Length: 101
Image 1 (cartoon, rainbow, N blue to C red):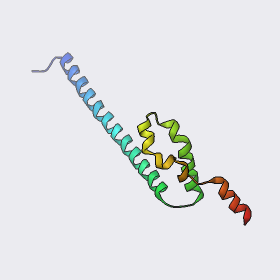
Image 2: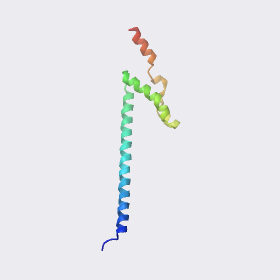
Image 3: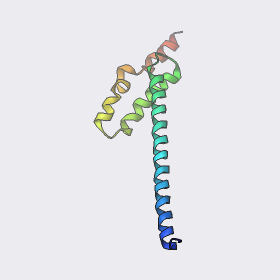
Image 4: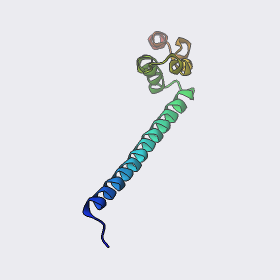
């Protein structure tokens, strides 16, 4: 015996909702993975002791942008090593070195 059309529609709607929830979970998992990988990449770049221009510019950019991005002090504290002035290159000293050459 066939199910009434209304019951079949209801079952299909429940299945659609379940599949949409699954798709949403997959999307969130992918977004989280991207954030983790990008963060890992940036941290690895910062841990290098390169004194290249792009390394110094990255540190300066992060020191400028991160405080505005974080809304919690605890989050900001996690990046204190990146944000403290001693870890940032002194741009004025670099320009003085170039002038003396």
